[in-house]
Length: 252
Image (spheres, rainbow, N blue to C red):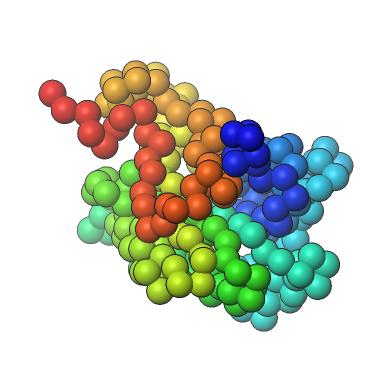
């Protein structure tokens, strides 16, 4: 049946950066639709686990600490003996007023988390997905992976790098049945963007930049993410899907 093709029921899923914002909502939504989800993050809101579905588990892990990351993956594998989906969502940003004063620490931290962290998680996922005949890796990139935005070179470079990392891994790992695709949000209302959203002038300016005339909601990302995780996309790899309300291709 058609609905079975889009099903993620009982799939074993890891979502990085699952403690808040887009990652938390992806993790909760995947669990809602029947996946067994492991959220990986550095910290979580107090008592957050008490309001989560029973099939969503939180692991406190630094994705730059390879030993801790290996232990987390082993915990998951020992329990389930399979990994179906990895969502590389963890990300940070340090916008500055002027890019010529952009601190090296901001550059280094951004690339470490947004790009190296995703590489670490993907390499470990490969080990388990290869053994089990395949899987789906979904990188949460950004419209910044296509367009240069002002005064945030670390974020733009990291998302552009993540986009091409996805294509490189799709090329290398396709023979093992592992698909790697990129899901790029436009302006989505989250904790990270709330200051821009609450500024009426800025919000209106950004809304007018889209074809649909509105900001994105986190819920707008869930369908495309589930599609890439499900068997409905089993012949799709190395691709970019932008959930941006038409931002990238709006002409005159």
